[in-house]
Image (cartoon, rainbow, N blue to C red; front, side, top):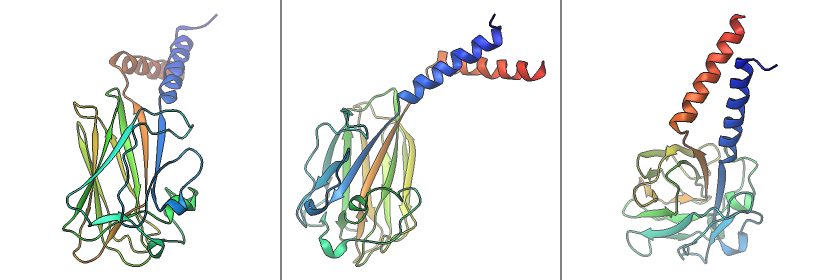
Length: 231
C-alpha cells in the first residue's frame, strides 16, 4: 500500500518530468553561405556585407517547428553584415560552446564600430515560457568589446570584453519573458570606435513557467521528503 508521502513524491516526479519536456533549444548559425551548419540548425547566411533574411518559423534542436520567427534590423546601412573568410576564427573555444560544430563557431556577422547597432527581433513567443540566450562572437583579424542586451517583459545584458580571437567568453542571459506582443529583442552594440565586433551564433533555450498549483505541489513534495527523513 502506498503511503501518503510516496504518493506526493510520485505526483511531484510526474510534474517535474512534464516540465522538462516543455524545454526546447533553438540554434542559429550566422555566417557565410559557404560555411552553413548541417543538422537541426537555422542558418542566417549571406554574401559578405549582406544582412540576414527573416526566418518565419525556425526549427528546434530536434528538427521540430519552434514557432519562433526571426527578423534583423540595423541603425544604418553598410555598418554590418556577414564576415568574409578573412574574419573566420579557428582555435579553442569557450566551454559553453565547445563541442558545437566549428562551422557555427568560425564565421559570423560583423559590425564596424560604436556608431552602429543591430537588433534581432524574435516573435511568436509563448508567455508561459521564459527564454535564455547564449551568444558567442569572435573574429580573427581584429576586434573590440561587444554588448548584447535582451529585452522582453524584463531584460538582461552581457558583454564580451574582446571578440578578437575570443576563446574564453560567451554571454548567457537567462529568464527573459516575452513582451505584450509575444516578442523579445536582442540588441547588439560595439563598444569601441574603429574596431569591429562579431556575432557568430545564438542558442535559445525555453523553460516552462510553473503554475501556482504546480509550485504548491512541489512544496508538498519537499514536505514529504522532510517527513520521510524524520521517520
